[in-house]
Amino acid sequence: MFGHGDLRLLLLALIEQQPRHGYELIRIIEEMFNGQYSPSPGAIYPTLTMLEEIGHAAVQPEAGGRKSYAITDEGRAFVEENREAVEAVMEQTRHSARMAARAAMPENVHKAMHALKHALLMRGTDWSKAEGQRVAKILARAASEIASGNEA
Image 1: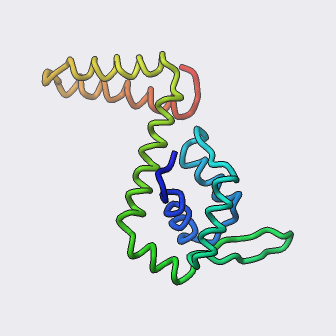
Image 2: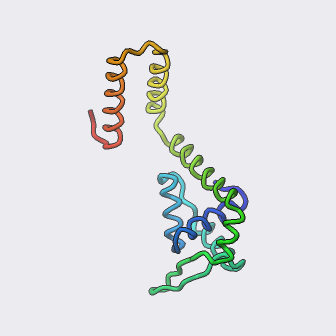
Image 3: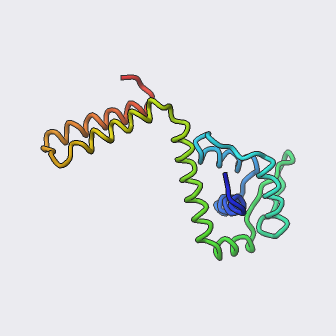
């Protein structure tokens, strides 16, 4: 899912926002992918250990033996020096998440989306104000019903 070094940059960007536990990082990345991808602990924890060893992250022990990872000043400087690469990884992650969601979409929903797009484009420029309002109302209602999960 990630290119060489991308997971390291993503984890640094996430702990730059606030200190986090390894499991929390796994959960956040899974949420970024809308549940379609979840990094394994075998990928996350060794990367966090490497970040600690090179001085970009520090462990903050907590009650119950849990470890929270925080970015260090050296890590923050690294992120700033590589801000463009960090932003590129974040954008690639968002793009990959969209692709994963699209791949998980049922084929009949994908076909219906294509049919809707085709119907709208076939209208060309022949739109009266009333027709525009009618179509916008249909689309808004459909979007609302889809988002809420309610059946029509």
